Image (cartoon, rainbow, N blue to C red; front, side, top):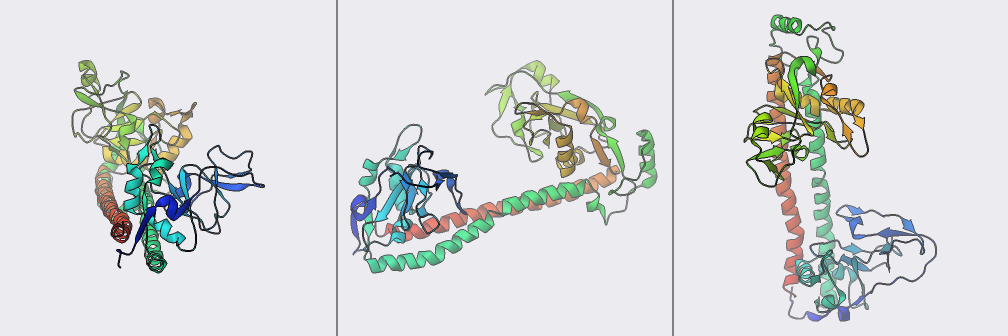
Length: 424
């Protein structure tokens, strides 16, 4: 495509720029802010009359108008179709409209998404709290204007290719949700015996001795579980429960302090750490490989989340966490971690938690009553092996997803860059 015949005009002279200001209107209109714009569509933030509209709702759009977010590092283009005609938009958008039939509105729409324009927009952005481009800096940008026939050729190709790229992106973005469900299904299967359907090498006689050692008077058959599993409260499978340090952590120190935010997806998240240099705390609250950490205070949805410490480095734990000292000859730390994070464990937390203002609590006394569907230790080992294998598979798929989504993001911008860079 020849680009030497492209004109370059100041953007306000090439296309009409609609300044802030809304005329009175009747009835109610849907409102959209920049936060409404997502890759898979728009979500209205309500319907408002002229007198009760949000203070920033100062744009009424027409079919064929084009909007783009004015904030730095933000790409949220909108092409106004029949569904958006006469809707309200916030002042967080730049608002454009072709001056006449010599400009294809969708050519404008695609240019405002191009890396060339986005870079110029960011270069002209100013401000402190919300950095964005103002009208003065926007007016200095030159708009590339090829003949109408070339505009239409570009639009025709992009209208075919980009929707397919974006549809693929929407599909890919469902993968993390599916993986989350898969991981939860794996944990539920681990605590129900489903993973052991083809495994029958347990020593029943030895397990009878374990039952006697636990002085379990309950029926050794549990509905929905293998016949030889027993239901045991955590108190009888533990040597004690310990609350963490109540002292304030520091930005620097000798050892990291594991806090409730570091308990993520059954493991320790080693980002956003704080530290302690208190020798007595370092000795008293030291963590050991295999310690299970239970978040006793958090929001209603997050209280009770549990992670396992795997001895990565010397560390202690904070006061909103309970360390469970489980009897590892009877209960593997990994299996306990799976049970507490499974749907079964999460439902138990929901039933026993004590809700306060903005926070819920499950203390050590409550935690000690948690009933564990307990298989023989050899079966626990097999469950742990299978769960680790399945979760590793999920991690591998997530890594491939991240690579794929990064490539998809580059395809769209690379295509727009190739088209508009040569003509700018």
